Amino acid sequence: FGKEILLTDGNINRKLLGTMIFKDPLKREALNKILHQGILEEAERQKKEIEKNNSNAIIIFDVALLVETNSYKRVDAVILVHTDEELQIKRLMERNGLTMEEAVERIKSQLPVEEKKKYADYMIDTSKPFEDVEMQAKEIFNKLKTSCF
Image (cartoon, rainbow, N blue to C red; front, side, top):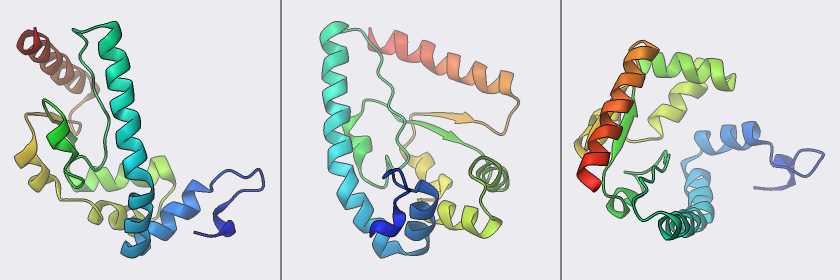
């Protein structure tokens, strides 16, 4: 991606890299090829380490492209955390300082939520108030505890 994506301290300028890859599907694909194998290997390493220390552990991975990369096949259950697109755009703009166009580009680069729902064993709707989201998460956790042990 070139030296222009580096900050003066040598770290990656994530905002600039994000802008580059969400505007260009080929660059996004190249970045995914660079990163995904290493990410999968590290996740597997961490999973084994956790299981070694606690065979009853419930391990939750936060994976943005779980369905798109077929990584859902590596897990026992898929929890889809979602909201409506309008709220998703608003949150991306606020959290990442994106324009509406940039936020929409990022959302469109992923599989639509309605398609992801087909792969979900559980869903958490974050368009609800925090207390409702917390309750949804606790209900799923309790279901996982009883189904895993």
